[in-house]
Image (cartoon, rainbow, N blue to C red; front, side):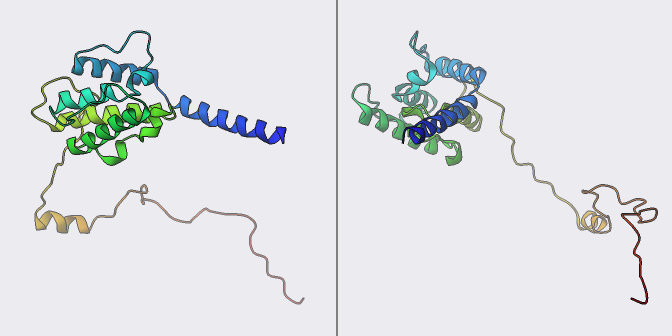
Length: 192
């Protein structure tokens, strides 16, 4: 029995190390600096990144700076239920603001400190989404998302393309089977 418990603990520690390995301190620092610049307040001194964000207050303040009034009430005191409510309001505000659902972290990721890398990815997704809001004149985070660039072709151009051989898999020039010899040649034995 003791052996099994030890294996479970080892497996849990391995998973925890893998999740922690996904974290990038440079990105976390960049995200923290961006948040501090946007909200106008520094993270509490001596408190690490995930603990400062854990109650959801800073995240809600961030969304209210980006779009004033998007979160009507921020819970600044209370237990885990209030923290979870802040995080749910934050996620709802992100969706309204235009952040894709796939970029949002699960509240459990932050509350239990399980996947802080995904929390940072969400912050970067918010930063990218600010580019799509012309009313936002503050700092941006991350690269500017690409925009649609439609191309229009005439019927003549489309017909010209039909006669071309696509070379996505490489060149077809000089492709023959001459000179190829794989394995032994086939031997046919008569009379057996």
